[in-house]
Image (tube, rainbow, N blue to C red):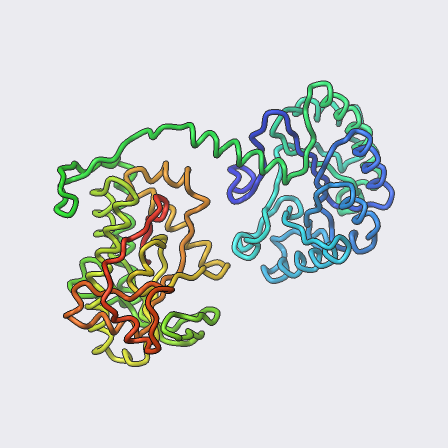
Length: 474
């Protein structure tokens, strides 16, 4: 999936004149310096995915690569496939190589290419801080029988903007020929000459990615929406609207999604909040780093939390009857505000409710939650964060009138976060007389008593949203 469809990896650029040269398996004490000499003469930049043990043995070459403006990436500490190593072993390989490069250059690499391009499925969760880079074209240059002329012809056919060339500056790895890089350097010299005549630029992978993202962003900004959502009548909006329809494929997805919710309710024994139309909950232990919450409370791993889940059917109905993500987000916050008194009363009567330290949810709705008493926190990097991000993006495509366009246009800024409300703040919502009372925003009126501070009479806070903050409490 990664190599064919580019899933979670960079493998092809969208550029007008730029080509990325990348070299694996080095540094080699003989051929890497010769390659650097050639690149310097031609004024070309490249990216070197180095093997950690080779880097450790040739620190002066790593220093030269860095000083001459090339990009250094990681290719594991030893040239072993990730499929034959445990996820923890892969991470150790990468961390050890990163330490070697940091010691020599003073900076840590940001790019990673697994040997043979074979990605362990756990790499996506464990290596989120690194950009995985594969390639557009490779040429078999690790074999000596692919002579310089044949190699040049193969490369010349692929010489076009946006290409990521995979080449090798070292031939000592398993399956390679020791002197094969000599042919690579000979063919590359002719390719660099041809590229200069065609007014192409040879750039590092960092510039290639930056130019590609810039071009995609420009294209998105120039696109007009391919469809416009309309709505049904809604008492809160006051104007007449019609709901938008969905196609047969989306209907199948929605049906499966709603069936999964029923299974989820059974597996995790969810209980309804109030009439159960909007929210459900379960009591569980928190598992994560310590978090300093509002009301001077700290949440530790092992503390009990009341985990809130949005009812999928009602979430779908909201999305179908909303004109935009902004309107859907406002409706979600309104429903949450209505449900908080029920959640507070539920907490007071359920078994083990006295042990619960906080109300907890995960959502893409970031704006406006603080006005209800929540604090927002980044999800710790890992498998759960990665799966949640993917799930909520799919959810956006399903429920929002312009979901697919929104994910394409705003996908990078759509990030789920934890919404957590301390027990003390939640219990203040049980007061039936607080018609227009909300917990104060941080930085407003001060008082020494945290509970008094949260019960101050305030004007209804305006709910702040951005178009991309639609989400779901899962």
